[in-house]
Length: 324
Ligand code: ACO
Image 1 (tube, rainbow, N blue to C red):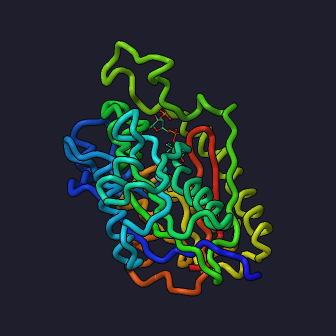
Image 2: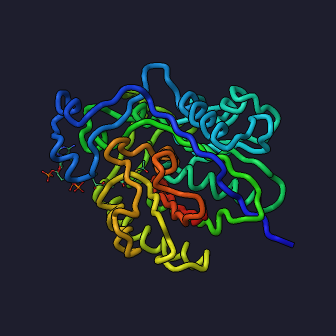
């Protein structure tokens, strides 16, 4: 019997209209375009308007992915949405998007794995399809991370942006996703976190203490080392050599981290999709935003091998190697 693969049949993305450049930031926080660009590769980020939610961006990205795949929302068996900035505590943002799409009845849930959220969600949906339980799945990564930013903290506020991306996955005899890897180490929680919540309690601080805290230099070091071993593990799991990869589509947090991973794989930067300059770090939104950009700009072609990877708070890290 032929094995069942999960194949990406459509991609979509959505960004808020408002663009904030590094020069805009210079006006209200002690920083410079030169510092931000040299350290991170970021030039600008998109910022959600007041009242514009993660679900709004996710819905738009989902509509575009469904249209690209030629799939009706009513045909979906599953919606998995990676986010760490849900609209509400519950229902999940996946449920909110499901109702707006008119996909009522299928399974729908959120995955919180910080910046690895989309790649985790893709891995989960892949397992559902491989098991035969699901034929058509919608996988979304969506965030409004700027809602968790203190615009006075220059160490973090310059790094993040808002956005969403989505893919439609369908069961197929043709590859497809070859391999996915997912890992976490909660021992690192205090290097990158948002230390308040419903159960732990909120604080008598601006925005109730909802604010990203990050030890940037330490995160950087662990991220580079961890991604090195992740890409090796993923190649092994797929039974492939790095030379068989056409594109690296990495999490867009920092250009220097991306370059280190490309070097490890012996890939030229011409084979790496980079959107961090335009989007900054959109957490779960970053990989599917980069993928959709790569597809729509004609860079990624059908039949090519793509390596997707991400690293984020938790720590969490995850990858997927697939034939597009
Ligand atoms: N503008 C100007 N100066 C700044 C700024 C700023 N925005 N922010 C910090 N500085 C200063 C610091 O105060 C420090 O000054 P000092 O030397 O006088 O003490 C100096 O710049 C250097 O700071 P470093 O922290 O050493 O800078 P570094 O080169 O490490 O870059 C950065 C910082 C960009 C945060 C980097 O460490 C990084 O990208 N880390 C990883 C982030 C990441 O990948 N996160 C994972 C995903 S995020 C998620 O999951 C939500």
